Image (cartoon, rainbow over all chains, first blue to last red; front, side, top):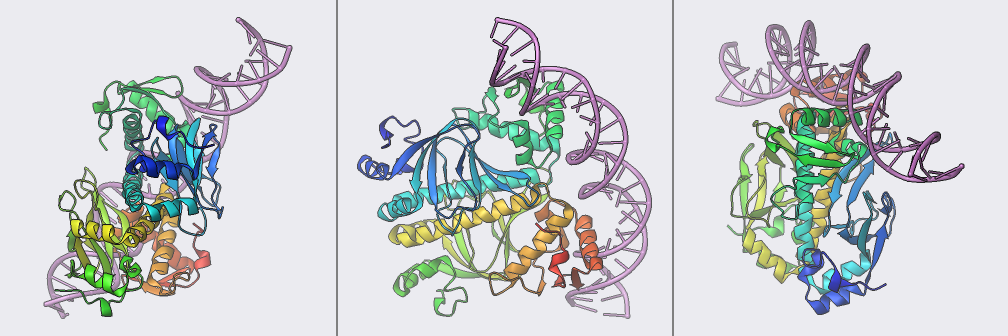
Length: 226
Length: 226
DNA sequence: CGGTAATTTGATCGGATTCAAGTTATGTGG
DNA sequence: CCACATAACTTGAATCCGATCAAATTACCG
């Protein structure tokens, strides 16, 4: 199936936005769209055929599994985000859909070729890689030595920002893309601690829970500052 | 001072290794070497003039400071490593020398120009950025939910690998580039816990401490597996 | 050789985990 | 559409690991 770039909702935010129309169409011929169900795996650690993808809609998690089988969430991917370990012999991390998602997939070699042909694309990817690095480091400082309350508060605010259309202001009401278990895996906590912390935030009047996934930010100032 | 690439010890491992001699000399004219004393700052968070550098010798740490003034080490940089936040309005993290170090510094705009002129350089940097991302995520999984013993063991093994000439096998005897306090800041632990953990490893016969910084790996198998 | 900073060691405390029920969603087949 | 089954989440009590507070010891530098 060829890509429908013309109607792509992330057309002017994704990496391919740096290309002009002709270049983009050329690249589009090398890619294909794929729809992922909740929990479906896009890339598996250990595979040797490199591939990469742009997230069109939905959300992804990048995870690793430690020796005891505990999953660790290393990063979340939001629409227009790019995933793919193009260099290196094999894939190191799993990439899994958090909810129903749509991605635009390319084979590693095909994309490398595109980078060679369109250096701007390489630069855009470099910029993105640096941003991913900052995000990873932000999560690192969040989970490093902060209390459970700070970690959960940080995650809520970060997710509220991602859920918002405007990049700066957090959404007042949004749905967590993650289950409690996934939140815990991301923050280095247990399910129970996450749950108790949310309860405390709600009792303090900082948030209101709405069903399992819904969060309303009543008074973000009551959350412990990151 | 112009660069002495001809005698540079990381000449064929650093990012500039992808350039041919003429290109490298051209790039060299835009850079300058700088010697850093232990504890000296290369880049400060908050500055708005982007710059970047290749580490020639010594070691650097990339740190952030949280609201309470606690320092968090986000990454270590070893010789041939590249540091620099070229995109984005200002620098987000501090870069500080762990010991006496030598770097090869470029202004942000000058290096961006070089990337434009030599696309291979951009690709090399992209590859490096991805590796940095993996390193950051590795630290993330190490500090996420692992016990103090696993964290310290992981750090020792990682540092032993960095200290070794051969990339795969760890050095049997090496000096920690970090103080106890810095180790603690990197692992999300306290000085006391790091110290106690090292004592336990030594009593178990896994390592031998030699002075403040020296570590000899007697039996790595006795260390908890990452 | 003394002085200072870094590290180690000890005792106590607290927050997060663990184990164990309970409760609320979610979805399925009757 | 409802009853039921199952999974997800919440709540409670006990435990434990690492933090904190405090002091002793060691390494290092002039």
